[in-house]
Every structure is written in C-alpha cells, then in structure tokens.
Length: 165
Image (cartoon, rainbow, N blue to C red):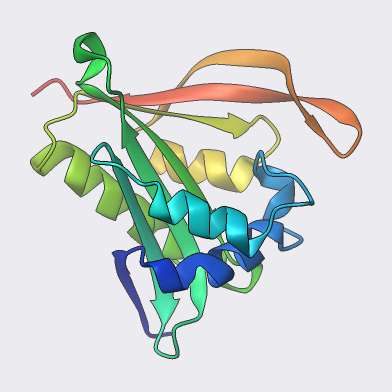
C-alpha cells in the first residue's frame, strides 16, 4: 500500500469529514453524527501556530488517516501537547496509525521539544491502547462516565508519554 503523510490542506476537508463519520471510526471519536465537511473546513482554516495536523493520503488523494498535535498555549504548559488520531476502517492494523503517531512524536520530540504528550482514549478501544502503549504512552487514570457514546456513558483512559532526556 502506497500512502503519504503530509500536513493537512484545505482540500482535505471533505475527506477528513467522511473519515470522522465512518462506521468503525466515528464510535471512537468525540464527534457527532451531524459533523459536516464545512466543520472540517472551518477546523482546518482555524489551525493556529500551536496546532499541527497531518493526513495519510493515497496516491489519488483519498484521506485514510488523520492525526493532530496541539501544544498548550498557557506559558506554564508549553512543554505539553495533546494528540488525536483516526484511521479509515479499511486501513486499520496496517501501520497507518503508527506512522501518523510517529510523525507527531518526531515533531514533539525533535522540533517542539515537548516533555509530555497526552491523550484520551475510550477504555474499550484495545487496538488504540495497544498502539499508544507500543509508542511509550502509559495509562495515568480512568475517567469514568466521561462521555456519551451511542446512548450510553463511556469511560476513557488518560494516557501520556513523558520524555525526560
């Protein structure tokens, strides 16, 4: 499979919106069923200097994954970033998520000099938890009943990766 990871562009709005709403992806995001391509366009156009967003695209431009890193703007937290990731269901377990996360972590470690990178993940999303642990993230706590998913309250793990050197 040939794909490229690159910074998100305005023309990726429709593809990322479709990805966010895809069954098998949507359930593990905090999005709503009403999410539209216009919402993706507004998100992309609103990215600021502390927002770093990448997509994995096939040769024909199809978006098969997206990942973002947001550096906290509070001066006392400039060493911390938060990440998010989603991958097209047909390309899960094929290394796309790993490649996207490695792109974010390279940026965090070697260009932004972040010490802490954190995320939240649904407690039952074992594949994502395995990916994050493989990349050095550790569970720090369980947020019980922290979000709603399909008419039920769901738990999330708070995970982080610390870089001390």
